[in-house]
Length: 364
Image 1 (cartoon, helix red, strand yellow):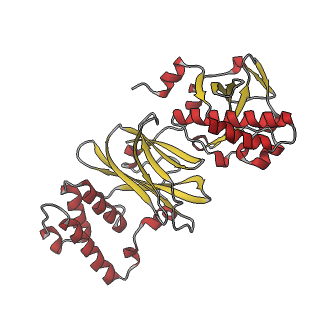
Image 2 (image 1 turned 180 degrees about the horizontal axis):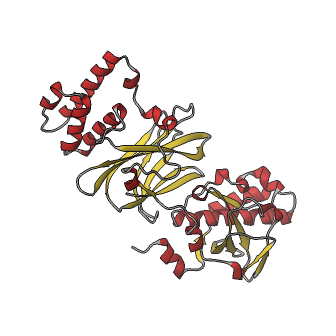
Image 3 (image 1 turned 180 degrees about the vertical axis):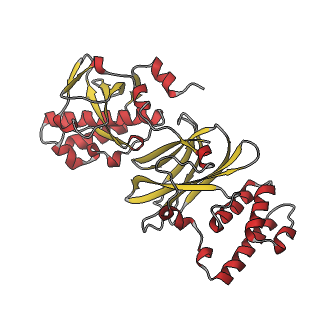
C-alpha cells in the first residue's frame, strides 16, 4: 500500500477543490470587515483555512475550526489571522494565501507568535481551486518560495501511533496512562452495592453469560469463584461478544487479573458542543496474534450524555477509507465499537461533530 509520504514526494503541490459552500462561508467573514481591502483579505484567509483543512483531512490529519482564532468573527475584525488548530500537533498552523507568481510573502505580525508552522496555499482568481504548495516551520517577517518544504515535513512532526501491543506489557504511551478519574465512571454500579447484593448480582451475570453460549455448561460456575468462572469463559468461548462481556466484567472485579483486558482512556482535550469526552480503548488477546479491540466514547466532568450526531469512525492506516462508523443519538451516555485485528495492523480513530474533529493513530 502506498503511504501518504510516497504521495507527497511525487506531488509538491496538492490541488484542492474549492466548493460553493466554501465560498459562501468565506463571504460571511468578508461582510464583517470595515473596508474592501480588509474584506478581501478575510475572504482569502477563510478560503486558505478551508483548503488546508480539506488537504489535511485527505492526509488523515484532523483539525478543529472551532478552536481556531480565524473562525471567530470578532478575532477576524481585530487580527489578520488564518490559523487552523491541529489536535495531534497541539497547536495552530497558519494558512497563508498567495497569488500565482508570488515569490516573497510578508508575514502579518499577529501570526508570528504561537504558530507551529505555516502552510502556503496558492489561490486562483476564480476561487475554484487551491494549490497547497508546502510547509515551513517558522518565519520572522517574510518567507520566500525557496523556504518551502513538502507537506511530508509536516507529517514527520506528527506523533507516533499508539502502540496497543505495548499496553499488554503495561507500557503506555504518553497521555494514555490509566487514570482512575477517567475510568471510574465505566465501572458498573454493582461495585457500589452491598457485599451480599453484589455477590448475588455478579453470580447472576456470570450465569447469564454462560447461558448465552450455544453449548453452555454451568458446571464450572456452580462452585467456582466468579473470577475463575469468567477467566475460563474468556479462554474457551468461541463468541467474541461473550468473550468481551466476560472480560469487561472481570476487569470491573479485578483489573489486575491476568486474563482481563488492558483498558485505558484519554481526555481528548477537544470540546464537542462545549462538552468534554474521553476515548476508552481496550485490548484483549485471543488466539495466536489476534486481538479484540474495544473503542468507547463517553462524556465526563459532570456531563451525562454525549452530544447527538457525534461520529466515532475507524479508518484504515492512511486515514482515507472508512471501515466502521457509529453515531451518537440523543440521551446516549456512550457509543462504542468492537472489532478484531492482528498484531501489526494499523488503524485511525476519528471523532467528528460539525467543525470539531479529533484523530488518533494506533498500531495493534
